[in-house]
Image: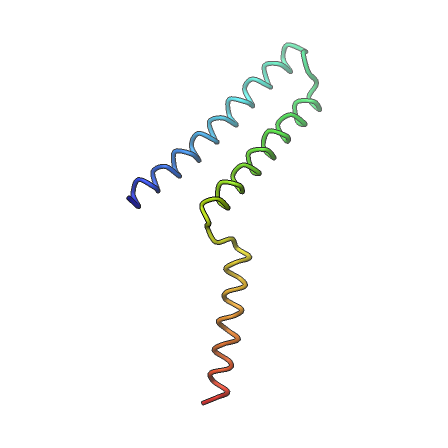
Length: 89
């Protein structure tokens, strides 16, 4: 089960990377044809990437993964508890 989950995550990351590469190719082609400017292309890619990052955060949140903030909070709490235990000894 865990292996299938890891494979699923890897597949999702691979698809996202492939999607971004394909988007870059299409946008570069539009620039070459003069259908959009370089600045417009940069803006489109930035928007595409931002939406992908938002989707990634949503998926990770739905899967209930710990964030870096969650981990930092837990580490601080553990450290405080360790200090409290040492003072009580």
